[in-house]
Length: 470
Image (cartoon, rainbow, N blue to C red; front, side, top):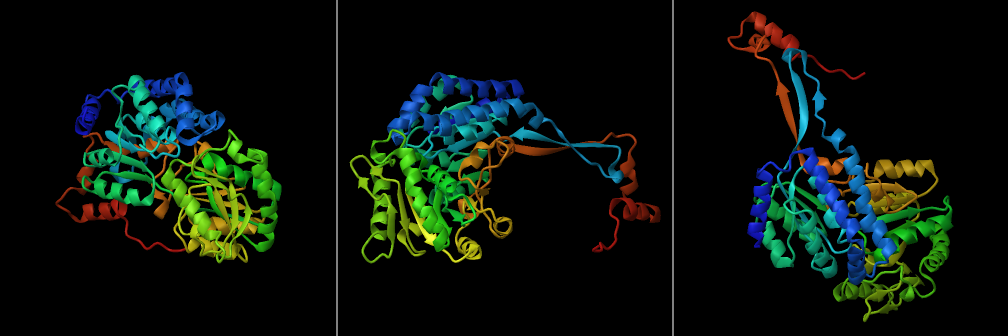
């Protein structure tokens, strides 16, 4: 079926009204869960083929992540969908006012390659819960995962979700169609293309983009525990995670202590030869490998001033880049853009205040991670920085809290999702008012306006008085 026919079929299905009952929505969510459980081995094998993911990591970050989100959504959906009462001013009484969540219509979800199952299906959970039909575009850069999704999603979610495979041409054609919401996860360059295409039809857009997510660390923390958590968040999926720690800021003393512990944590996780570890993944393709390896080589050149802490080995044939830690300065190649790979720069700053200034001088990050026991420093980061998320003491893990919104700000994205926030993203909150025709209290504000009506309007409808500071 052509792209245009696929979108038309999705709109016909939505216009039929079949998606509106809550029973239909729950049935679709249960069907998605069944698909993930029935074919978990197929999806795990696809993730291994595309990214070298270990089955446990695939379950933790993709399959199990999704089944947990589905269960949470089904459990709370009835409560989330209840009309919300709004107060009615005295002048409008008697009347009732509520807001209700209406499905938007046909939703386009464009997914990236780094978590190809999760980042296609997670937005769909919210879109289905909201009562929409969906056209999904998996990433052609993860061909095994894309093929698995194209095979199984139509079987389990026929009529609700359609999958369009292909590359840039198919994505371009999709963006030429009219949708009621577009949800895109990827980089800022393509995000701008998506936003420009959506503007032609005034289509609302959620953009989940990347960004250099910084870490600040000081000497007040348990450095062994901090190193393990940072290494876990950074080197998961071979560093190809949008919220992975991208670089670390700290004083010379703090970074020296951390640099002593990070290699130990890496060895604990992946052994002395990570290339032989089944738990350690691979870079998605040759171009990505060349980009990351090239930045690393440039910053390790004789005149760079950088210092290798650990790692540094690569193998182009297997797209392997060893978990690597490097001391660099702020002008290093690795500090120019999001690394999106297993290379962790350490950058020296003189204080927490200098770290805040450093972060604020760059694009707003998708996530910011702070490791300190100093309550004043924590407060300063809370009040003086802007980021999609702020975590104290742990990277990445906020994605596992379904009650927290996930999304960026500024260059790192717009809009958010997960849990109830997904339902809100894929719904229109419609205002509903019900005022009986009798008694017709509005007659007090109908023209003509005599002195009595003027007094009523001034007193009850729009009182005019100065607002004073107390």
